[in-house]
Length: 589
Image (cartoon, rainbow, N blue to C red):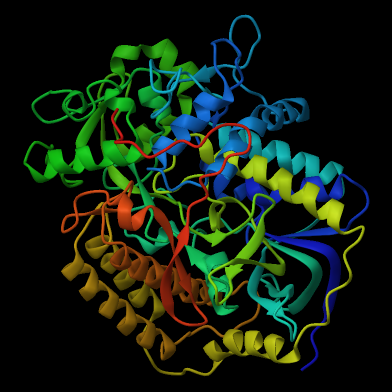
């Protein structure tokens, strides 16, 4: 079967903040053509739900510098963040944020007109001294403001946008280079091969592998699934951040900015329990520390009970109506809608919920996807890039600091665009795609037309989320994870014989959900293998059977090689360019 072909210099898959910042940098040069593919309208991408802000050392209203930010980020990562990448992000961050301001991003302002910055967890001045206020905010709708600003700039610079197109698979040539992707138009079902010299995965996270998550329904690990099917390795997939404050019973995010503005957590005895777990930072300790502390309070019987299940409470009423309405208007609205609580008068019921994927496709600072050779040395995969949550640069390591995700996507999206513009002047065209690759992708799409009997995929999806929540949540244990891995294998088998009742082509969202389920199961399985493989506790990965951090054996990344179906270790980069390395220490907040 012959496919229609659309050819561009670069294609970006995913139109959230990472994808749109990358596409903008490519197209504004005026030298390359760039297509932006998204399964939803761009401004409905998940970046829109980011609330708290962008963490960056502006040295603005308060004394600050990028080295303090780097120190906090390395410490927050539990020392497996790559220090060359963290240094680059923190050092170039101020320039990237000022660019956004010049594009028109409406940051909140101080009375003197400077950008407002709020305190967030894990931030400090002077290498761990007093609390810093480093997170630049647009009220509590920073992601919304960022996404609309970038969308406007992409329209202005004539990026070609394909809204409601679902990317199926990466396409390789006979040498294994990535030469584009297959995708279909959700509106009419038409399948197209998008040919490109550079393919950039910016598909976001995969929080929908869990039962309770802050992630949108579109966060289904599409980029991870595409990478694994193309034999591209993934790194640190055991590292999933559980945000301390999701609305109990709903999973909807309550920004860390609430605690940055002065809110605090209470157990059922009215105690500010974080004072016991983090005597200095208290409620603004690292997210992994706060999430574990909440779960310990609940497991030891000090949580609240109620129709939404066990939880603790986030108290905001003491901040006053004026502060809440000006700085946290979105939280007021969401709390009233999803928790049926007015924070001006009553505390919000909260519980840790899956929030962010620290792992992903290993990349260079300029976003080039990496694999390893037989000697274990890094090798660049020609034609493939990754950015944002689907990538693992790695600046977040075992635990991401709040506000660093938006900084990550604008800094590295910009870096990829600059790199692509520079190399395209001298890069030779890659060889044509392998027809077998394209046909295999079509077969994966069409197989859903052939199963007339079988299980409803929605049942499998629900079982997957329950399995992950039960066995791979905030606390993990070897025997439970082993059972979980076997359950995931069984779910994968069941999916192969599942049925799709609706075989129509036009706006068949059931077909999209079936294809997403392929990616969810792939992502969940590598998460499970990686979590079982790392026999220590570090950052967000907390094992009750291995409760201590083990730097001697595990000061490293984990890497899953799909081609060989095995786990290996990969060294952490401890070599920043502009300062001395930050050596591992005990994390105290």
